[in-house]
Image 1 (cartoon, rainbow, N blue to C red):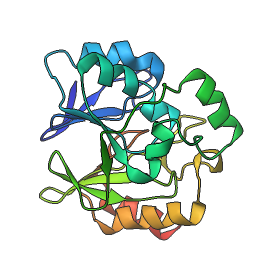
Image 2 (cartoon, rainbow, N blue to C red):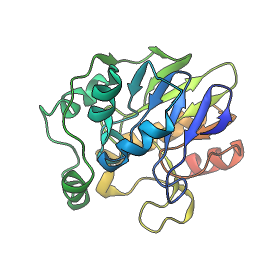
Image 3 (cartoon, rainbow, N blue to C red):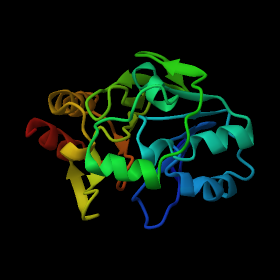
Image 4 (cartoon, rainbow, N blue to C red):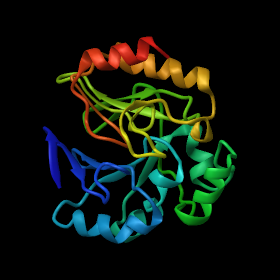
Length: 217
């Protein structure tokens, strides 16, 4: 594991920073793809989490959730607006070509959500902030005391197609509602975070770069 900040560690993947998972306190944040289950269990050796919590329900974030929850006997949390997708009661959205491909290649099986998250809930000392647009149930985990934001795919610091570093909106193929997505990017910037970690890309500490980007969307 790589320490990012107090009680926040990155579980390295290959290529680096392409699909990120974190140990936030004693909670595993996101689970990459179904093919990452063995790697994640190996990396978690000696660090038994209390829970798996998802920033949102897409194949590269929920992929290993069922396997990890069953193997490590962990409850699963995600925002209530994505719960039925995680449980297999509704299809994953948007119904784009790439989501359909990733359903066949990366997506994990449905699993019950033990803890539906809502605005203002606390997870491992971080406040849950509902930030829809990428998916209906996308969230930011924000820790007030030091301004750390775990932003999932509200914004990316890596182009998901070219892997070129830099701040990007998630493409239309992954985004349910562009207007909501941009409002959520501006919401993230309004928190004035000292550090943002993403589902894709390296951590960001440049407050002004985030504000400039948010002002331009």
